[in-house]
Length: 111
Length: 111
Image 1: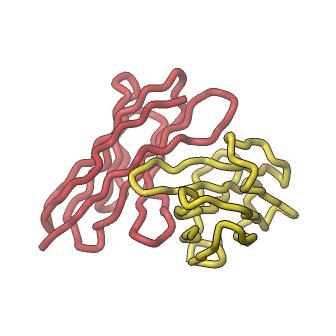
Image 2: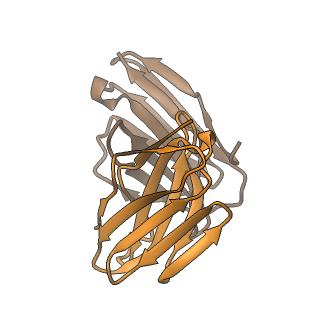
């Protein structure tokens, strides 16, 4: 299995940049997901990293370092609607392809 | 609307009741999942169905009984639940080992 750690809560200001970190321990890494979940809604897919480096998608970017067991989600030009929970999930090479989720980071964006 | 539809959105039930949660997807996905989401806890995988066959059951109490009549529909039958079973129950689907598409969940309260 995996041991996934991410901060419980973060706050940031509208227009700013925020970085949400995720560290993990796994015997055989096979991909890392980030999901966004607004209160009372479905988690929605943001990004998938399996190789080291930065993947950019508009205002959101996700970074992975497999050797350090570390990923971050970078949100630029924050908007109020970015207030949500951000879930990190890691998949390993063990028989199941199903990822294990972290507890999520609740991001509060204020004016 | 994500393409995965869950009903009902909210459910209040007594400990002696029997109810069912329904999940439906028409995305052509071959795998469907039930997750439990409690406050301050990671998403907990409950059941996995691959091509209608149950492939995982993560030590879930027998008061939760899944049913997958076809690859588009998934049910979770509930009976004699406990107050600690109150949570958000999320259904998800995926195509092989791609990322998940989640439903909006059923908010269950056991009284």
